[in-house]
Image (cartoon, rainbow, N blue to C red; front, side):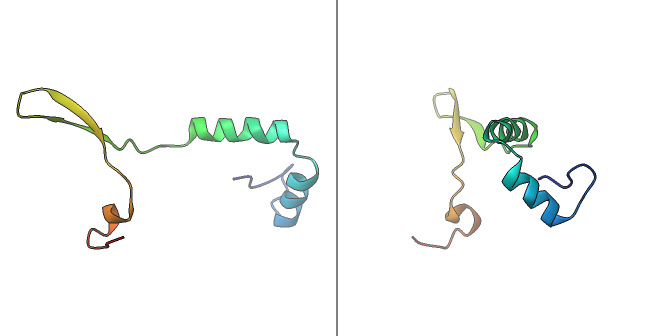
Length: 72
């Protein structure tokens, strides 16, 4: 996710920064910020049961979701 350090886009420079200067507290803050701005997929949906009640469920994201014929 880090694409440059002080304008330097070389992979070696970025790796060196992360290994030697990116403190753990900075890393924690960076991950929290990244989680906040990243788009997310809402896998919840609602349906109306036979009694007319609206219910919510979460669609499980498993191998069977992508390949229904796979038996695990």
